[in-house]
Structures are given as C-alpha cells and as structure tokens.
Image 1 (cartoon, one colour):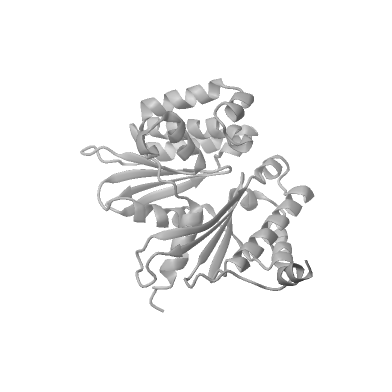
Image 2 (spheres, rainbow, N blue to C red; image 1 turned 45 degrees about the vertical axis):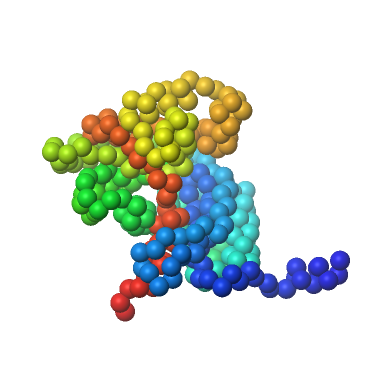
Length: 313
C-alpha cells in the first residue's frame, strides 16, 4: 500500500509518444474537457483522435440568468472541476491547452474576479470569450467538415446564446451571436427584443435562390434530436421530421424523458427549447434540411491550437 501511495503522490503521466492538445469549454449548462491528438503531426489539415472527454453538468446559467452572479456553490464546483481537469491533463501529458468560458461567464458580474481566483487555485487560465470569438472557434471546425462549395446556415445553440453564420463556398459571409439559449429560455430570461433582433437579422440575410441552403446544427441537443428521430447515420434530417420529433419530446414529462428516452436530466430539461430554436430559424429562412456533425466549441479550440502551430511568425 505504501508503494501505491508513493506513486500516487508523485507527478506521473501517460506518455503515448504523440502530441496532445486539450480544450476546456465552460458553458452555461455544462463544463467539458476534451483531449485529442493529431493523426498526422506533419499536416495542418489533419483529423484528430479523441483521447479523453469529460462532461460535467454544472449549469452555471442557473445562477447567472437569475442573479447575474455565480454563487459560492457553483463556484466551488467549477473550481473542483478545473482541479480534476488539471490532473487529467497532467496524467495524459498534454502539450498545449486553452480554456474558454462563454455566455454565462460573459454575463456574470463576478466572472473576471472568479477567473482570477480559479487561475490562482488550479493554474488554469480561462479566457472569457465574446460571442464573436465563440462563433469563430466553432466555425474553425465546421468549415473543415463542410464541403467546399454550396451554401449553409450554421446554427450553434448553447445554454446561454445562439451563434448563426451564413457560409458560402467555404467562406463565412455574415455571422452574429444572440443571447438566446436553452437555459435562458427555461428560466424565462430571454428578452423579447433579443428574439426580435435575431429574426430581423435572419430576414435581412440574402440567401441564394438558385440552390437549396442547408442548415448545419452544432451542439449536443441537435445531435440528440437527430438520434431520437431515427435519422440515418444521425447526420441529416428534414424539417418536417425535426418538428415532429421536437413536438413528441415536448409532449413528454421529465420522468419519461429521463427513463423512457434515457436522456440525462440536464439534457431533458432543455432539449425542447433547443428544438424550438433550430426549427424557428429554419422556418424563418425557408430551410428544409439540417446536418448535425458531432462537433462544437471544444473541437474548434483543438483545431485552432493546431493551426497556430503552422502559422507564419
């Protein structure tokens, strides 16, 4: 036993002989750690092999959207989560990492102060990023996944905000972030003016009339919606079936969502709100099909870290 304790007390790591990158995504509903390694270290446009993924439903938005601050209990849980993440990154011998906090932390009056305290305790520097940077990072991964041609409307729905980007021929033509998210909707904290602002922005989009525009949805809720709909390969779904799936989900109570559909409780409470956002945007833009690659902010952070290694000084 003493030998085991001696090993546990020392600084050890699992070195697989390859470079590893880590992303921490501190969202309004969940906190995530994603560790990945490039499949080809000599190529800028390479795919990544997941090494570790941990998701913790801390639900920081519960505090922020009600009181404008992150309370002591949530702050303590976040600190413990980052301490655990720091240990995992040490064990996996991570070479480089970035931690980003999004909508809830943007709105928290004590956010900057809390980030300084977390840096002191855990050693992890967290960037509180604005909606523009959040959108850029997500799109870093989305653009690599999409085919180079055609037009797409990228919709990323989180707990506190929704980012939308119009992509044509592999380039972002227009994008915006809105304070409309699943946790905000659940708490009744989405301002009518913000909803009006989003639909006015969509109305002003000039989408091509000579080709069908597809939606690309990112976020855990749209992936789960496609899975529950029975969509082939869980990657594409038409609007009619998405509406039917969302209506069915909203007709069930929390017990059935958790025990019959086997959703995690934090997902069960917000998935219907997410479905409303996706379908509302698609209807407003007359889009009839949505793709849902299982990628998000964490993937964008990893890819952004990797691409910077190839940037010309």
